[in-house]
Image 1 (tube, rainbow, N blue to C red):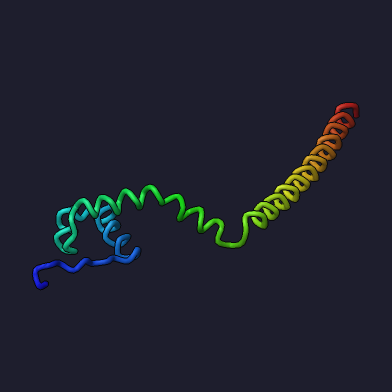
Image 2 (image 1 turned 180 degrees about the vertical axis):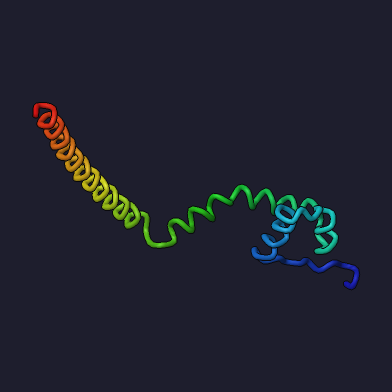
Length: 110
């Protein structure tokens, strides 16, 4: 069976490295296919898969720090804390404005 070709298997990292050379370094597809002895159809299949599943990479990195529930709880706590801080700031501004108006009135009357 010396006439049959043995299939080559590329890891995910290898595939991304090949795609990256084309997308970022502008290496022509024909050159990459020749270098790695792959058919252009295979290259374009990898590219299609890469773009179709790209969002999953971002979701995985976002959810990689625990469950969705913990992330939601942390976000809710942060929103509550920021809302309270904003309310305190509004109250302080309101008091300062009252004092400012009172001072202007007292200076205007003097």
